[in-house]
Image (cartoon, rainbow, N blue to C red; front, side, top):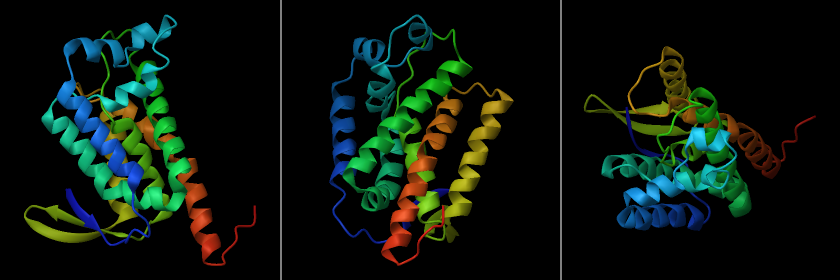
Length: 209
């Protein structure tokens, strides 16, 4: 399934989403193996008492052109509405929290790994979680076998995260950090709840907590 767009218009210019995309592209064009080793997240190094800052920096590094295209494309599709709903400060907190939890889950799953983890997938997984909660009935225009379908966000993203979990627990070795996706998704859930409450409050709907 390949998303094309959604049907939720942005009420503001998504400056932070565009900034993350631009910065990631610029860094990718400047990347060297030494940068990946220094700023990528290495679980074995983390458990020895290092790499704390790398739990964030790794999200701005990418392995190849397809890797950065996929991540930035998903951020382009879903990030604007999440930034719109949470505000810029909330969006920054979501991105950083999801990146950190993505790295942490990866470190738990692969504690002895010396391979650097790179990519914004964990952080973007958090964006997807927030989007699903904030806009569950939004329509995602999706290409499936050359046909375009309008798929509800809760179904599209729910299926996506279910697939990540299946691959994670099945131990599929594909070079993809499945547990980082799961960790990042979990990190986005509370932000999605907050964003949903803010949207409902705008509509005059209040949650009885």
